[in-house]
Length: 237
Image 1 (cartoon, one colour):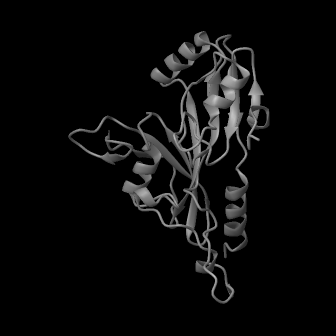
Image 2: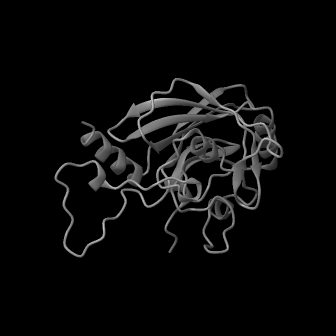
């Protein structure tokens, strides 16, 4: 039995498209290690469905699915013209008071990995603002204006505040013992991180519909990110 069903992930459905809140660990496109993915779920309901953009497997949040090729082309044009506003939330290491700072170093993408590269990299821009500061961590709102692979992850890591749990780009996992007073773990037990993945969530999305309507969508955090933020808030002082 499928663990996920399209209707359970759907936030909004229109004549031409569907907005879903992708859970972590569900691939956007085909994955050789897992037959289930967002595209397969969509095609099981709509034969002509196409995913308009993608999220990393560990990243949760908003995805747009076209029900037909006309909307897919329309949304692709919006992306190309940078007329889709995306907002991501990330938990990063350290305490950072940031007010719409621009991270704009060029990004070069190799095989499944990206890096800052001033010679080979393409122009990239991410706008970053602090949402909340905790004892040892910060919740950031990140708005990418370009669509490079792993753009937010690379830009944040390069700026000195990697996303928590993002081992590929130098991020450390969040352990409750590091900031909770009088924390105890059972004998012969290993402490597990609060989130076993990198803490990145596609929280908001805005674009103009083909009918000229300004559309804005928001996606609630998945359970693991909710629980982590709850612990960070409880142990803030």
